[in-house]
Image (cartoon, rainbow, N blue to C red; front, side, top):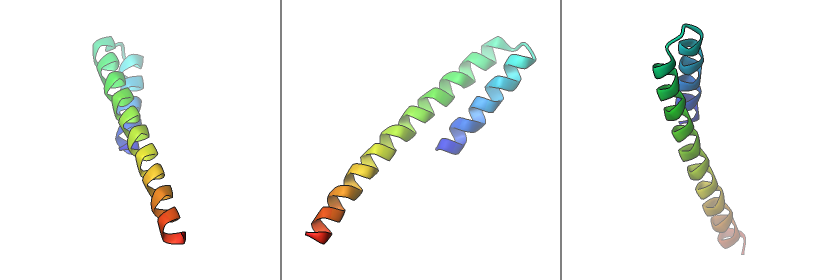
Length: 58
């Protein structure tokens, strides 16, 4: 998911360089949404991993 966010970010930068502001804005929004979804899933998995580790060790 982070890879897709980076791809959309690069597309956004390239579109901005060539003057396609609408496409640039749209792809930047998609990249931002994907990045926040990635962060949410990462934090969720981190917490679940820590809780599972405590149950295994304890």
